[in-house]
Length: 498
Image (tube, rainbow, N blue to C red; front, side, top):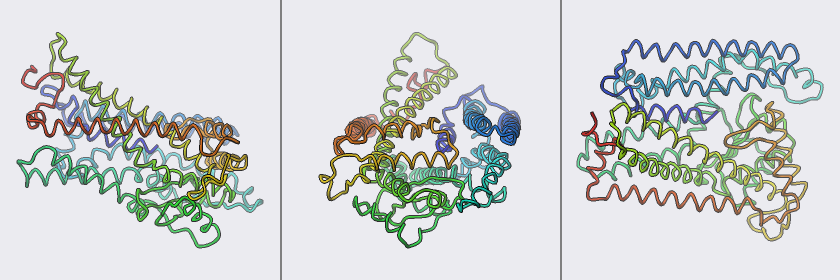
């Protein structure tokens, strides 16, 4: 779900590449507004019907079938919202239409352009509320009999706000801050350093992005309902996991979700700004050894430096693909074809789409291997591996595998997720459990996943360095200014386009 806000922001930022900007393809404002709002209203009405039908199946006892159908349609509707925004931005010039009302103010036009899609996502959770309440209230009697914690279902508006904070704002807030910081820096440089070389603006943008990214964990504390975990035996056990691997954290936080989510996360590149968050449902409904396994998994992400390496990998992939796509487009431009402004725009959009899909596929594969390594790290920790005594632990123990695989199974069960359900970034629960069982008894320091991830990091570094060198050659070349002006189309020069 967190990929959706990223794609929506990316589409709005790519608005200048759209067909709607071309001369002769201008669209009336009324037509643009109709194209924006009419499909979303129809889509929301359809989602209401789907949820209503699935709720009827749950009432009739067909819980698994109803929830599986709802999950499928939720997935499709979210991607339709993304596709819809792409169409209205690239074809109908939605962002330009917004700017006729707001002007090109820092972050205001982008937020206004995103608003209809965000309201559509919120509408989905609004329709889900009666079904979610039905599912939440169903195990009430059993929870009272067994003494398990039961969470009262919040009011409808509170429920929607919780979903928005967790699934949208956690990613959207830092993204918008990065966009706003870059816009502000670009505007400032344009007014104060008109003769500056291109690399100055690029370096300032990178600095602004890095600053927001570094302090993003502090923003998460504002966006989410979190509080420090209470002192006691559990906190001591969790802190011992950090100390065992020399990982500093600012605090361990309880993520208050009203029991609606069983999850954990680690945020922050450096110890003074690093937080580990565990949801209330996870702490109160899972066994102690499983909570420790989840904590070790999150510390594994920090110990193996997955977050910065994911950034390097993504930048390297996008950079390498942009170079490759640019070369291909340049070659296509040499074909004996009469290019028009429209055909050039369509070709460039298709190339960008192909590059984005390839980057997402590669990034998903890398992310799943990082998750597998974090699962492995948790099993290594429980088997006795620490920062100071790696050599004392010899093999992955069956007990460690049982704890980590059991934690994954509990997370799936408590979140009502099918273990076979695939996940772009994490892989399916079943896939991860089968892998864990396969490493039981194997040498603790000679596992294939650690070698594979090491090669992934080397490959990502090579791609990143190649892209950085390529960019520097453009910025520092003797014709840097001219190359920046002529970069609008790698297929044909603008003056040669009819």
